[in-house]
Image 1 (cartoon, helix red, strand yellow):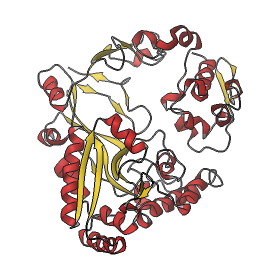
Image 2 (cartoon, one colour; image 1 turned 60 degrees about the vertical axis):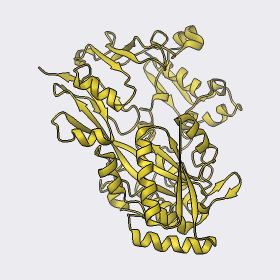
Image 3 (cartoon, helix red, strand yellow; image 1 turned 90 degrees about the horizontal axis):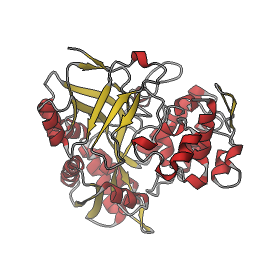
Image 4 (cartoon, helix red, strand yellow; image 1 turned 90 degrees about the vertical axis):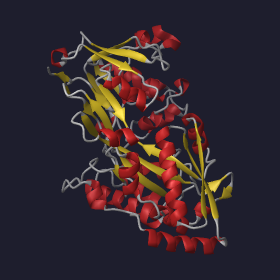
Length: 439
């Protein structure tokens, strides 16, 4: 591996001919990336060059406080030009047409439809002496029940849990929870098919937020260690640059469950909308966990807010995602896993012109605060921090633009002889390099 492998990979990532999915990460940071992706400059003009085999020189378009963290995201990983060009259209489609420089290589992976594959120790890895596991075999289970059966019959050493299974096994000594920075929330769409929806009413959005007992959702429905989210940013993710305090501690809780206040906001909304009943469609994928969450939300909202009807609409994830992307929904279950360690990865989602907004939310005040963190405050850590806190208050306390639900925790059954599985809050979710096996 050389510095040129990074240069080649990054040029491909911004080249419009390769239709890159994460070009925005480069456009927000590296000089000329925006112009290249827009077809105005050639990929060779990206301001990332190799001065020798071991040195990569990068010129940023502006100060980017999170840039070092950004480099851990997969799109910034190196690619070997000769290998990519030889593989052609098959590059990255199976184990034989993928190249590796980490502690493991993949074997027996035939593509996205594979149900089984293997991570085998990479004998060419620079730090191979610290890799104790020779092989990790992966099986794809069709559902949680199938995974638990594999584990209980000693055909698997780890199995994910959720819902009733998490509650059933939570007292066992092989039950493990892993911290996650993934936040699930409801998008509240203010305009659908060119027409304003009832959710364009601020009081209604506040009513919905205050009507959901998120603690009950996490304890009685999920049961996997997940906990209520009373903010946009997750707990234990980023810290105050001066005091080290967690963002959630500095920003505090927003829109905490309060059925009495919810009814008050709801009555104001009904009066403003000139109606005594409202019907909203709740969109999500067709996974069992989603369906269970939706039943809970429907019950909570309809009981707390008389005259409100929630119509549940579930479908395959890809179809639900497309309807959400095009704004053809009322309420949509969404989730966000950070790409890098910085508040920007969350706060930028709701900028007026951000592609992921898709709910017709527009706030000049919010835009100004968030944009300032990427401009005049980029080199002023504490002021930047305070701007993110202020923007969260606008998004939630002022506008109730989304309905935060819960911060995920991953629950698994894990063989007690296994240790060293590393779960990451951003970037690649797991590292297996330091796994150890005991007798």
